[in-house]
Amino acid sequence: MKILGIETSCDETAMSVIEISGKDDIKVLSNIISSQVKLHAKYGGVVPSLAAREHVKNIKRVFELALNPIRSKNPLRALAASNGTREAMKNIDLIAVTRGPGLGPALLVGITFARTISWLHKKPLIGINHLEGHIYSNWLSYAPTDDIFPALNLIVSGGHTELVLMREHGKYKIIGETMDDAVGEAFDKVARLLGLGYPGGPLISKIAENGDPAKYPLPSPMAKSKNYDFSYSGLKTAVLYLLRDLKLENPDEQTRADIAASFQKAAIDVLVQKTIRAAKEYKVKSILLSGGVSANKLLRENLHKTATEAGLKYFQPPMEYTTDNATMIAVAGYFTSLNNKKAPISGVKMDANLGFK
Ligand code: KG4
Ligand code: ZN
Image (cartoon, rainbow, N blue to C red; front, top):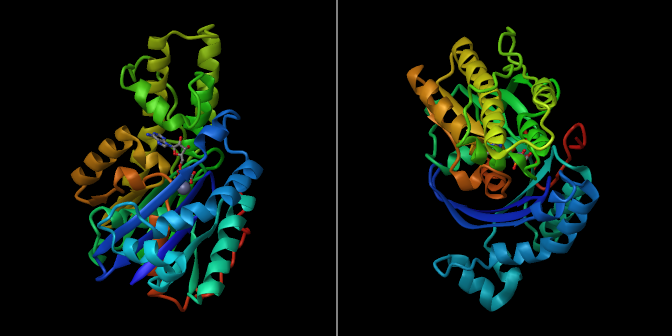
């Protein structure tokens, strides 16, 4: 079975083709991502109307590239090269598109494109929740089998910080989430305070390698609260006050590295603590990490170590599938289609909140 995945919820126009032969055997035939990071960097964050305009500009090319993989070993290549996308589309069994949450204007570009090719090529279409897509990026690493359930997902991205209990494929319960900023958003905002640029996560973690995480003890937000919710806006403000108290308008390199390391530690510690505590309370078999912040080395290492010590199975996506991509949407499309009573195929509804966030 071959599935075309489409993702346009934020600032990446992405399409991917995967082939699934058994439940555990997922082959990625193409994974095309056209990133708009440089465009939005000027504004310190993603501008929705600009993101939508870029998706419109790039989506047809990304579609052609996804069906015409450059790597010659790709079986779709010959067909697509000789007969174009129309022939290549004959090989596709299902189209999966991100239906939300995300930026409304950006989502609409992907959904409209998906509906059009579904109609034109007479292929079934399925709408996928973006966060469910992130969860399924884990199936691209170790191909977890079903004895991982119940599983606890820690989903950490620019827009979300969620602990989601997964009893089986398609069965979710949110047990904790952020009350204000998402953790990725906090990385982005603190990076801006330190004059580092956008996106902030990779830049903070890079300079933090040379910093002392104990130099400026910062509050680990809501670490002591009994529930599984998070809060990151206070931590960002604590960095702002620290810079003010240090009377540093333009901190030197070492000070910035120390602040970055201290912030990173505070941000990550609470994620690891609450995830492990929730895993024990809900008696899960495994922990699955996902979302853009799952690229963070410290988080990967600490959560892996703590989960393993607690006797839990631990999964994390391969680095290339941590940030937004369409392969994860295609994989989620496959598992959702197995259970298609709940998710009508050949109709895409946007999320209940219209996916606007
Ligand atoms: O999942 P994603 O690509 O997009 C959303 O759905 O939001 O996540 C993007 C977020 C950004 O906030 C970015 O700063 C963060 O992931 N991020 C990181 C790292 N790499 C990306 N945060 C911390 N450490 C990283 N290495
Ligand atoms: Zn995402």
